[in-house]
Image 1 (cartoon, rainbow, N blue to C red):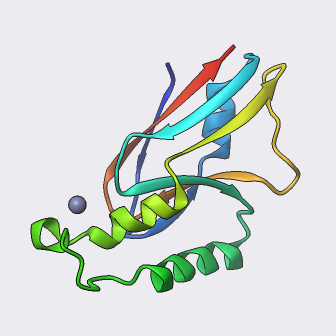
Image 2 (cartoon, rainbow, N blue to C red; image 1 turned 135 degrees about the horizontal axis):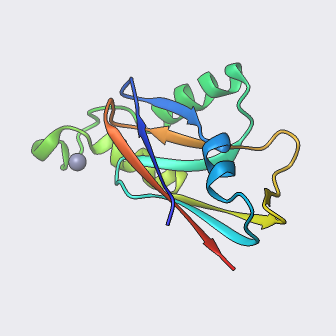
Length: 128
Ligand code: ZN
């Protein structure tokens, strides 16, 4: 089962993993599940336009501000990261036809780091 490992560089960061996923499903056919194994990361599909990437980061920061009285902050001070991850979701599903991801013209698979920098693991499972 292909695993994508990435090292993020910031606390909140969006990484376009489309190319890595494309390699992982090469030659296959079916449904690809792209799944993050962490509780403070997310995966979504959208455009990777640089202004939009900044907008996603600023919007989730506004929706779930840091240290807003969360109980989990008493343990490890990262409740905002968990809550942002819940809003965005931890997997996406993409059809794969003749080895090719069936993404729309502007669709990219985006990994969202919410409590970096860290090493992260993403599983790509192709269901035939
Ligand atoms: Zn935590």
